Amino acid sequence: RLLDYSLDAGITYGDELESTPLEFEAIYEENYVVLAPVGLAPRKSGNVSWEEAAQLPLCLLSKDMHFRQIVDDVFDRAGVHPEPVMETNAFTAALTQVSNGSAATIAPAKLVESLAVDKRTIAMPLVKPVVRHPIGLATLNHEPGLPAIVALGEAIQSHDK
Image (cartoon, rainbow, N blue to C red; front, side, top):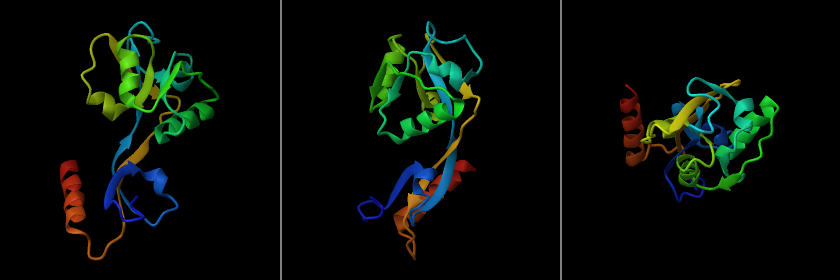
C-alpha cells in the first residue's frame, strides 16, 4: 500500500522489499522460539532444533502469512516437514492453543518477550539453524522527507540508543 500512496510508512520484513523502490531502515532482527506447554515441550529449558520442533503438535500461522512462509522455509532447510494440528491467521489463536495445553507454536522472540507467559509455558530458542530476519521501517523516498515520517525515523533511532 506504500506504492499506491495509501500509506506513508510501514513496519515489515526487509526481505519483502527486495524488488521494490522502497527504502528500508532496519529496527531489529527477529529470531524465533518454540512456545510450548510444559507437557509438550521437549525439555524444561535450553534450545530446541527445528527438527525437534517439527515433531511437536504445532499450531502454525496459515500458509498465506509471510511469517509462516519463513517458518516453512527453515523447516525445508532443516529437511523436515511438520504436519500442524491447527492453522490460524492470528497469533492470538496459536497462543490460546499453547495456554490451554493442546499445541506448541513458533513465534517471534520479541512477541514472546512482550507476553505474560506463565509457569505452565516454556519458551525455547530455535537453533540448527539459528534464523534472523530484519524488521524495519519501509517508506517511499520523498525529497524533502515527509515531516511525520522523518519524526518517526528519528524516534526509532533514538530508541535504539
